[in-house]
Image (cartoon, rainbow, N blue to C red):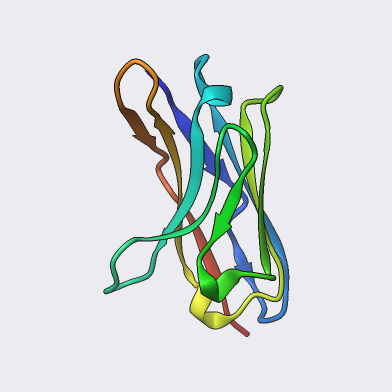
Length: 118
């Protein structure tokens, strides 16, 4: 069993920065693809950024150049650095672990609220 715990969400002004963290339990973190998703009120959950076990990253077009995903396998932690935040970035942000060796296993965190407002 894997548990994911996000932290770092808060209220921030437009143009500000935040760093989200997601700490994972268990032993499969380094072998897993990690992702950050978000869900705004009345909208579907969307993939914001992902990083593979090999360090390859990909981003939602609207956050390219502003957000950076990274991982520290020694700490079983994935990060999302968010800069130049906009009101439309307001959402609950969820951490996702996706593991495909020896069968598919997928886990979600509980979410952390990011509110961008003046």
